[in-house]
Amino acid sequence: MKKNYVVMDGNTAAAYSAYAFTEVAAIYPITPSSPMAEKVDEWSAKGKKNLFGSTVDVIQMQSEAGAAGTCHGSLQAGALTTTFTSSQGLMLMIPAMYAMGGQFLPSVMHIASRVVTSNHHSIFGDHTDFMTCRMTGYAMLMSSCPQEAMDLAAVAHLSAISGRYAFMHCFDGFRTSHEMQRIEALDYEDLRGLVDQEALQAFRRQSLNPEHPTNRGNNVNPDIYFQCKEGANVKANSLPDTVQHYMDEINKLTGRDYKLFNYYGAPDAEEVIVVMCSASETVKETVDYLNAQGRKVGMVQIHLYRPFSVSHFAAAIPATCKRIAVLDRNKETGSVGEPVYLDVVTALNQAGRGDIRVVGGRYGLSSKDTTPGQIVAVYDNLEKDEPKNNFTIGINDDVTFTSLDYKEIELPHPGQISCKLWGLGGDGTVGANKNAISTIGFVGGKYAQAYFSYDTMKSGGLTQSHLRFGDEPIRSTYLVSSADFVACHAPTYVSKYDLTEDLKEGGTFLLNCPWT
Image (cartoon, rainbow, N blue to C red; front, top):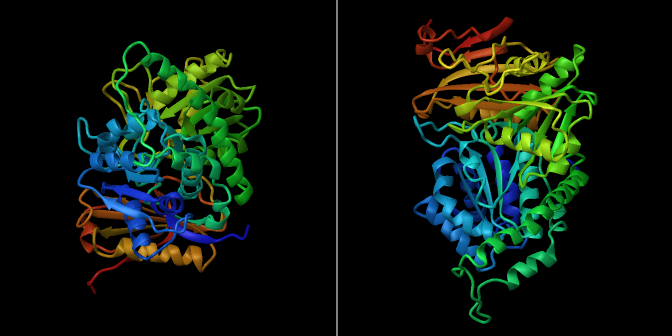
């Protein structure tokens, strides 16, 4: 396949693939998912065609509940329908999701995952929102970077059509949704041949139509409800193979290697981390760093979280593994453990691998930065005679003492240039940096990454642009803390912040100011 390089953020990448398979998009904006709907609306207005030769019919509703209801009705009418949401928006969709999931409608939702307001409001990223939806009957597919957001968005749509199953495609709000990278765009013509036309026609035939009326959505009594619920096991049990089939098709097109559970690291690893979404990239970097020092560590990246396939998961764990740390990016208050941890413990028991010691920990709530130093602390914890369970990383918990001690480390990235630019929300710094990183990635032919750390105030607040570029793929899904170049475009920051704290020895500092 001829490589078509583009510079995109995760939202645009997911929307690009979603557009191909979508006939109706029912939307309502919420940070940080809004750009997905905006892109689909823009492309539709400009006449961009989907795989079926038409423009997407975009319907903006007055709430997320309305958008979900529109998805349900549109799917019942036989149209492939998509929505994009986050956080409280996703919570308002849950009632309709139970119906779409239970009725096996090929709904696809793309989620830029974010905190759901509880003790405090936060617009930043963690897995609280999609974890709340585990019982809706939706399959849950997880991406870790803009490239995966594009590729696995396509897998979600293809699997939804062929498996006749509702899908959520989730990635980390801001960290992936707003992170720009140079990636390879899928070709719509390559995707066209992957659509299961027979399954699509069966979906069309079963649509609500006055020409062939049907009766559905009935009330049922205790005599049959339970049996119907258990009868659905057949669908859930067969779906992992469907998803792997389409991952294999995307692998053939791209040369990448997607599995339901991807193992990375030493083949004879004794300590393994299980994780999903953007932290997976940081863990991979740390695995390489530790194994180069003689350790035997590895990691399992979860791509298909629901339905959770015990057999595929067990096959991904090395036979030598003695201890596992499961990292969750959310907190289920009052539970004995977080969701992924509980699933891993159960899956290992069912697979006959109960000999493996498993501990769980929390990281990255509300976009708290997750760094290689913190991941090293997790592996060091696993080496102990009594590894700490229910731990946290990235904070100093001096109240309930859950945290692991860690030291920040700087991983070697030969030939990579990193930059940190300070600006004021709305002053043009972010826009200029997006243009710069696009030029470096597209015209300069470099691997490039741009991440923008926003203040909650957005316009008028503090913005920090974290840019990296070089000749090797960039997997550093954390903030720049050792920069070759630091710039400040707001002179008032000079007396407020330590602007050169993250500047390398011999690095360059630029102050953009009106002073002589």
